[in-house]
Image (cartoon, rainbow, N blue to C red; front, side):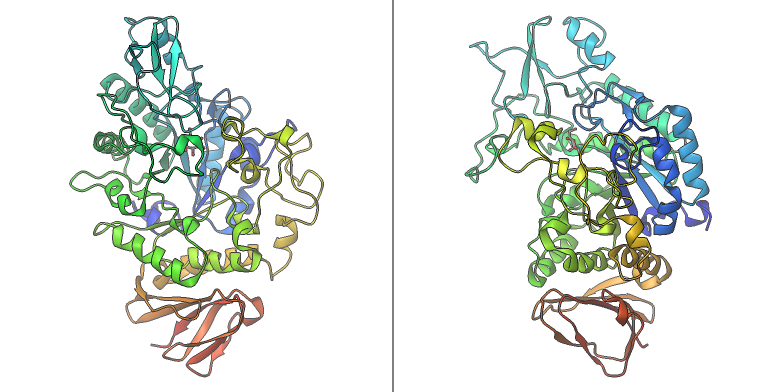
Length: 531
Ligand code: GLC
């Protein structure tokens, strides 16, 4: 199918794959992945069957926070290549029928950005108002009690201006002033720069924190602070998810809508019951606010049933659901639930109604990679140690084969890879029974089957640790049953049918002679029920 044949809302039926390019494939032996590396792996992406790739930031950056600290929005960092490499990558992905989504980081820049150098110089330069500046409190300390997510006060003193500036994250990541129309216009131009180059969508980073309270009111203490890392000891009511932030997202959406068929997804914060707001009402906001509820849920059938229901209830009418099972900020779920249950999660992700997102390595059941203390790169871990917040274990380079450097690089990998015997692509591609093959089959089925593409999702009461639901399109009906227990379970399918995919490969296409099916421990089935 050509890209255009999929229509403007291609993302409804797409499977989206997150890639952190620095850890995907190195092409020049410097131990860091790059754009040519991604280009060289397009065959794999095509084989896997994903429809779109989302790249974490590739822009010029001192790389203090995985490139989320941008020094030039319109340049590719030399570590990753250059704009020509980028254009070649877009063309080659499109040729392969794969779309490209870029990370867009509008909340903050790097303190190395030219805008910030100018802004910090004086109180009356042309960009004086491009960042969030405030006078000291009466005692000379920070203007209020706001905390940085990465530890300590969110305010940093600037000698040249005799003022503080605000940073939601690192000291080296000053927040832009989204109340300033010039800032909005400049960021709109950044979006157009990449959209004009053929990018199919943007993922808005930290979209919930774009505006902070203009009265700078102090945040109240968090009643559930006990045992939490210091940055979470306040409740961020005056810094996060402000009503004015929604207008910024509407503005970003208007720019996207200048280009038909482009996707706006975004990182949102807070509880499931807030997610509906990020879709917008009269004025549209994000097409797809990323939903991490499956990762936050306890891993048992009743908790998952409740999590899925709560999320679906929180969606406004007409909103298209999203499900995410991994990411560069999230602990690897395979480490939490184990390899067998990971197969169930793959089946769940790719059968629920909504757009599935997964993260490079999830498809081989990648687990957290142990990082020795002297190799830690993540500033979060360095600044807030001792709470298990380090994100390096999921950012370690991709394992393509079982060689010491994993087929990722010929040099010294920027983060260590785990030892031999861990899952890798080459071994799993060659074995029909692996989780990689299961992912591939599930993606292919989802693409081919109308029930899984756009069918309605109907709840079925979960019992005895079996999670079940139906997807229905016209007179076709697909039943999904996932046995989360380690014991066999009987399930009444209320009809005859045929197994389309089983998490145990030897059961793949069995016909059900009886309406009752016996599920093995930890087994999941997709069953087409006879019409
Ligand atoms: C987003 C990114 C995260 C980064 C933060 C600050 O949450 O996903 O990786 O640390 O923004 O830029």
